[in-house]
Length: 222
Image (cartoon, rainbow, N blue to C red; front, side, top):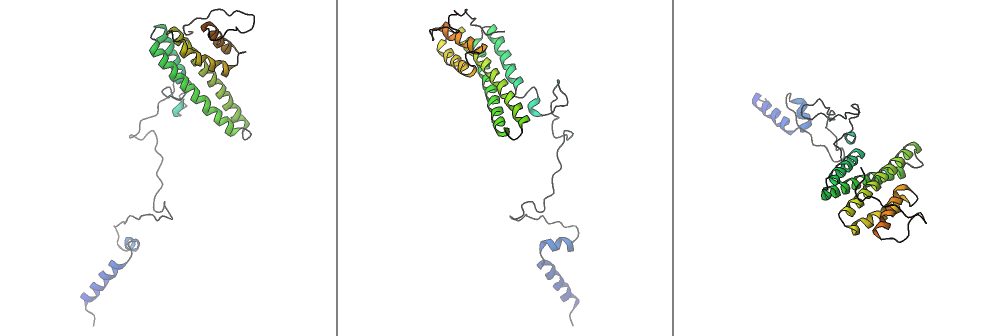
């Protein structure tokens, strides 16, 4: 005859031998964490609920006063990679140049030029990606690339004028040549850049031909 103590010992031995996954069913109140296998990396993991601005652990996104419904990060005034950011730098540069703080003006113009150049390059890459796939998006990106390239060239021109005001023509000349190449000599900004080169003595022939260009200011335009 099997005694009660023998039956109890056999039951405990069997429970200790079962897998942990079965033990979670047989033993109420005990939860065993499962490690997902390499073949199923998401096994046993519950999807996380998306965090909302109402979560007290997260700050509420800043609101654009001009468009309160637009909560996209790059649409905010504090964004660095945006047209508004570059234009703000241009205004700061003009203020600094008016106060003859040319070092600050140079730094702000260099920063604005870099922002506009990056934006133009990114829009150009998007245009190339969407061309012949979605013409509406491609045309929009092409316009944005041209507009930001124009702003870049204007910032470059202002930077060249500040270098002239600093009596550093050797720094102004490469910038002016870049503008002529980018804008084309037939466009207004391209002609103004070439006129600066003529006034500096870097080129000998005025443009348009037979027309002596009027002297231009060496201070950034307001």
